[in-house]
Length: 370
Image (cartoon, rainbow, N blue to C red; front, side, top):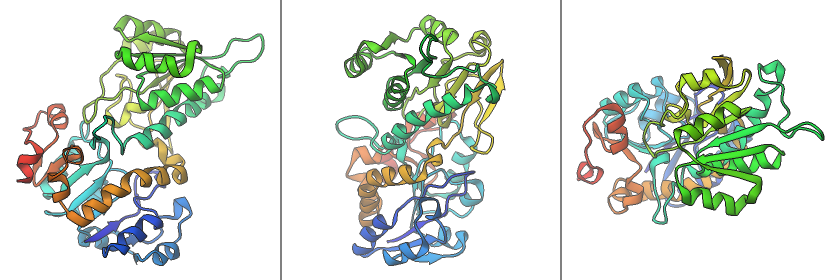
């Protein structure tokens, strides 16, 4: 199979779909890999490194997109890239379709089979291709939040860990999944007072067992969310419903009642955000102030640490890429957990949560593949 690895075009996105070591694995199996020139520059991988692994370097993006049978990248295809998709092509990347109607429209029109990293499941539970970036985003969310709390960034001027005689910042984490767990670890490590809220008692029990009484665990009723956010210096939104739009746990009225200069880091922004006041931002302009609260809502947070992120992502995705290249769509037909990643196929929406979020007709993935 001809596998294409384009250079990412989203603002300040320096990750790359395949590292040279992954390319070598594909080439050894007899596949042709085309890599766009300088695609790996953000992680220190030169064109020569890719050529040594057996890749062909392609100068222009359009030719790569039009000729590849399987396109492997990181972030969702941008509008110009979607114009180059074609029927029968396989696309494997993060898609986050639920809040993105224009992207869904373009994928449906193209006839492509679009497989989303973030909805692939595994037998023991969890989302194996979302997990590594959730780990990175959870840790980055605390770093970003601490920076936004600085006075010259519009924040309250609070040091996350405090100093002797001065209380540390209050950090509230909404959601105790992978992002939330790593956010808690970072915030506690920096000395903050940390509260995590979740509707799963099992998740709260797991977190309490992991971090002990230094972490405050609270069941996430609406009243509990409101009380925690109003007392917080930093709120990290890390709620996730796989494939679906994020629930709006933070209303505009609640933001209005938060402390002036408090910070919301909305990690759920890829799925529409968990605050009514959240709007997608970029690394070039990561924050804005709404109702007196600083909002950080960058849609590709892990792109800020591309070396760490790309290698962590490749470790998770490579087995799936190899199966797609070896077997094509048959890899999805025989594996229900891999098939859960199929969001769009041949003009049909094949993920129930995406269809529900956008009010579209849902076709069950196995039936669509048949």
